[in-house]
Each structure stands twice: as structure tokens, then as C-alpha cells.
Image 1 (cartoon, helix red, strand yellow):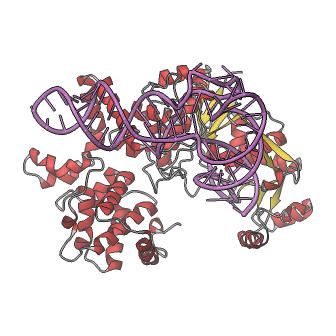
Image 2 (tube, chains in turn purple, brown):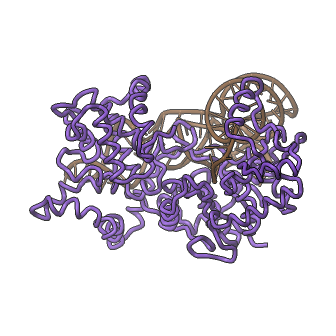
Image 3 (tube, rainbow, N blue to C red):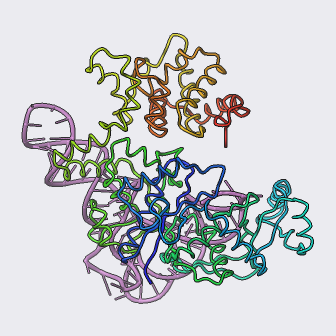
Length: 506
RNA sequence: GUCCCCAUCGUCUAGUCAGGCCCAGGACGCCGGCCUUUCAAGCCGGUAACGCGGGUUCGAAUCCCGCUGGGGACGCCA
């Protein structure tokens, strides 16, 4: 049996370094064993998935040097590799489970479930579906369906005994079935949940080994149970330790840049980033710091994974990147890399309309566009942030609002930024011109620069956010207490926003 | 709160499975020095860890138990 692994990202945002990390391990494991590595898009969340995000993920993984034997762009014998195009398959499998008595239709409303949850939390430590609809007779269920009542499909779960999860790294993990919820398998919109789609696809696509994040351990019993219900052999499971923020919590964009696009724009070489991810929880037999993807494959061994969650340390990544730049590029290659990175049409064309009309000599380009090539530089001195109408504490407040927008905005587009910041200026009673000055200082480092919203779009969400954050820090930072004081006003301004993209989602 | 996972320098880690070679090695960072027209880079040196308590053993970072600490999961998100 040939080894087959996969990475199954959900296209709901910027490509995440955690995705690359898990992909790398799956890739190395497959290649080490002469097997195949697949890419499958898990876009079953219709409200959050976008084609744009999917394209960015594919592009980023390729940029890193990872390739897949089967996937939505390259096809393969088990197409489609996009779950939204496989809904008939999931429905049919779900039907099978219902007929076999392994699943049931549930007509409970969101309100009832919320109420149930509240009562449970108050009375016991266990939450979860109470099984009300499981008792419905086929006739009763049919009557509700005929009446047009929306429903989901839930799986039956044993009420006693333990589930043993054979984890390749941790040995058997035991979880009591009591702690496993009657998971929804098919949502009321007809889409499968992760649990169903994942199991069905991994089986149909002949996946033999599932290397995934540790966060999945607690739902592994559901997956194992589904394999059993279907009468399928489950793949080998291996849960990788999670990448962490410096405070040890699971790596998150609020605390750390997590987008691969950020690292690309910051000027990290793909081979250095991949090398660094390979140093997360894994080591070469000789403890080498620097190695290529091929070297990693050659020496790859699951036993060399350490289980403590590694902190993603940008300092060390930078050091490693420096070594790759200094030690592995000829002058010619270095020049090519610089061209690839920024001196190319793809990057420059969006910049051109921002500069062509405002220069007299080409040499004006340096000072005018330096901020496009600067990563996250040190901000100007605090006094430079003060304008005539907006100064001191208000500067920090305004930048804080900007940071909140950077977290909340559904897409990082100039028009959305424009709307968000114009509305903010209005709500806070500033003229746009006064309001924007701190942003120019934080983003471009000078009040004389390319148009702000377009500039921020080109720089990307993570770079922009990092610059805002750094500017705020240089201005003395914002205490949690202060943040709490300011937040309600911001939320009040946008919670009921007419523009959906500006809504605050907590 | 409940369930589960984890535990070596501030951080990434080697060593743990097959106990002695470890009063714990390497790397990042930091500090100092050398080199040098600056700054880097490079070279040399320093700083700093087996979470705690019990066992088992002639001997424990390594095995067992407890505690503590950290993390994850408890969604019609993945």
C-alpha cells in the first residue's frame, strides 16, 4: 500500500503559516515513504470560504516549494478536490448512515440549542446535544420534513465505554464516549461539516496517514466512529504540536503575523521559511539548523518530532533567513531574488498609478515609495505624529481604531478601508485629513506619501497591522484598561454598520 | 468548569523509547572581546535549563505515581 497524505486547508482567509507547517510534515512523510501528497480544499463553510483565499493558499504553498500530486488545480483520479463540489457524495453517505441507524435528522432550532446549553452549563459540567430528535419515529420525522421544517443530520454516539485513539506519536489516547457530542454531520444548508466530509474524502481519496494539528485530538473519536459506521479502515492518525505565540497560546493573527503573504512581503526567502518550519518540533539527526527540503525528506522520521508546542520566533527565523541570503545565493541569484521580490510588474503595477502623477524626476521614487520596500521599520519620533487638530492621547486612540479595523475587516481592500476610516473619522468628529495623519505616519513614516488606502492594500493586512502596532508601541502603547475604555465606542459605531464588511464579529 | 495533550536554558532543540559516556550539548537572543574606514558579517568567550515532591534502582533529565504549570477541545468553523 502506498503512503498517501494530504493537506486540507479551509479557504477562509490569508494563507496561514500553520497550514504550511502541517503541509510540510505531510509532504516529507509521503515523499520519504515514496508516496503521494494531496491538496484538498475544505470549503464547506459557505459563508466564509472564498475563491480568492483558495488561490492565495495554493500560490503560497507553491511559493514555498511544496507541490502536490493531486489537487483542485492539477486534478487527479479522485476529483473533485474541492469539497463544495462533492456535496452529492456526502449526502449519499449521510443517507446511508441514517438508514443504518447511525445518524438521525434533528429539527431542533438554534434557540432551543442555545437554551439547552445555558441550562446544562448551569447544572452540570457536560454540554452537548440531549438527543431529543433521536427518539423521533421515521413517520414523525417524515411529517416534519413534509412540513418544510429545516433539519440537520446528527451522528449517534455510544453512551458508554471509551474510545481509544491510536496516535502515532502519543500512543493510545483514551476518551470516554460520554464526552463526545452527537455531532452535526450535515448542516441545514445541505453542506457537510468538517467531520463528515473529512472522513468520507480521506477514505475515498485513499489517504493512509493523517498528520494534523493537536487541536483535532478531541474530535478524533467522532472520526474513528464514522469509519466504523461506514465499515472502513481508518487511516493512521498523528497529531502534531501546535505552533505558538510568544505567550504560548495557539499561534494567532491577533498576537503574531501568521500570513505567509506577510513573510513573503517582509522579504523572507521561501526556502528559509520552510527550513524554519522544519525546525519547529522537528530536528535533523545531527541537529543541523540549516537544511533544504530534500535533506529534510531524506532524514524525515516521525520519531524525531518533539511534542512540546514550539513558539514561532521571528528573531530566529530572521537569523536563518540571513544565512540563506549570505551563504546560498550567488550575486546573480541575489539580484534575481530582489527582482522577483519587488522589482517586477506584478508588484509594481499597482504602485505606478500612485506615483506617476506626483513625481518630477524618477529619482523622486526612492523617498516616495521607500515604505513599500521597508517591512516594518522603526516609526518616526512620537512628536511627529501630532497634527494641529489631533494630537497626544487621541493619536493613540485613533490608531487603536485602525488596528481594530485591521482585525475586523472582511477583506483587505482600499475601498473597504476607505469606508471604515472615513466612518471612523466621522464618528469621532474629525476631518478626514486630520484623522488620517497618524495613519500616514504609522504606515508610510511621513505625512507626504502615496494615497493611504491603496498603499495599505498593497502592503497587505499583516504588514499594515504590524506597522500600526509598532507605531502604537512607540507612542507608549495602549494599556488593557485603556483598550477596554475605548472599545465600546468603536463597537457602537460599527456594530450596526450598514456595510456588512464593516461589521464587528467578536 | 469538564475532558484530553504536553513539560530540558527567555526561545528553538539534542539527549528520554533501549537508565550510567550529561555536575546536560548545539543554535537564536543577550553581554564582552577580536577583526575592521562605519555598520553588518565572521571568529573567540560569557550568560542561562532537566518545574516540584515521592518512589524504583548501586545509579534517573531518562522508568512509575502525585502535584504544579502551560496548552488544546468543548459550534449547523475548520
